[in-house]
Amino acid sequence: MDIEIAPGSASGSQRRDLSLPFPHRSLQMGQWVKLICGASYQDMPTIRRLVMIYALAGVDCLDVALDGAVVAAARQGLEDANRLAGYLGDRSHLIPGLPWLMVSLNDSEDPHFRKAHFDAARCPAECDRPCEPICPTAAIQFQAPAQGNVASDLCYGCGRCIAVCPIGNIEAQSYLASPEAFSSEQLSHIDAVEIHTQTGHQAQFAQLWQRLQPWRPHLKLVSISCPDHDQVVPYLWDLYHLMAPLEVPLIWQTDGRPMSGDLGKGTTHATIHLTQKILEAGPPGYVQPAGGTNGYTVDKLLNLGLTNPALPVFQPNAHQSEALSSPQGARVANLDLALAPQTIAGIAYGSYARSQVLPLLDALDQELQPWLGNDALDQPLNGQSVSLQTGDRRSKLPIAPWQRLDGSALGQGLALARQLVGSLKSHRHFLPTRYG
Image (tube, rainbow, N blue to C red; front, top):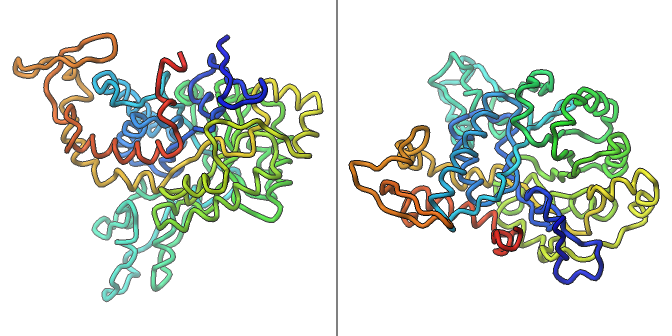
């Protein structure tokens, strides 16, 4: 087993197990980054491209809707990324072994699991339709009455159209993502699960956790997403005891202000406040901010001393020391689940990350269409080809626009995605010689 001591560590408690999958190592290092595609977002072509770009930018996890077709699109995006990585060489930051794919569930009504709906016949003719420009995915479509005027696959439930409708004509239709709707054969295509819950829902959570029994042998990670509440800390402790013992890493996702990161830099304050609360008094597990995260979040976390890729020596608080002293707590600690230091283990980006690259996707598809989904990457085009150095091997391939990243849609998208992902990850995180 390969072990590395974290830089600056005073004890072996900060050893990193280099035999672990790379996403797990990122958690240990405090450099985990997740892309949230949306628990209700089902635009499969867009999801495929988002997954491809952010996988090439170095994310550790991709969170998608619990939908077999969406999962298949995400898997295709990972295949696209893996295929392109060999040709991009050191311009790709795709992690070894590929990022983990996560699906989201809810134990009760939750804003992440809803779709907007309205009857256009009730809209006044003189209405200036403020719902249209405010929709981040152009899901409001008056020209499509057969779809209820909302393209269901594009709507991810942000609720912005509901807030601005002058006559209150738009409503949210909530639903439960059922684990039974996902076949046992499809479980092999996912690596992790996230459960969205709310304070006071112990009974609903316990019921859902029991229904997830068939999933557990397939999972590499469990994440719990919960918004702030004056009783959120004791509630998370209840959930921890309900799930224990776990044999995979556990993440507490601090969902500050859901689906708002693209609205402005101030949306990050709620998640930082909740993150501080959970780090100070929360149960064993890794802590990962989300909900309102954007390009300003990491800088604010750094200024507050809440992130440190060097992974400082952990000092447990009173609650965590008590948990460790129990036989169950000791077992969890041995499995590297229990106690992250008083810094975050990573960060998740949703609407902000998507907004960075969405304007480029049409141009990106035009660049890549002849190259992905067929054998074109392996075949010379009209006899004209160039040789590119790709690690220890050389491959012949046709000249393509994206090979010259400067000025191409792929190059622009990767630059934006890497800027966001790299704000938490240090450059050494991507060096294969360091991690074997």
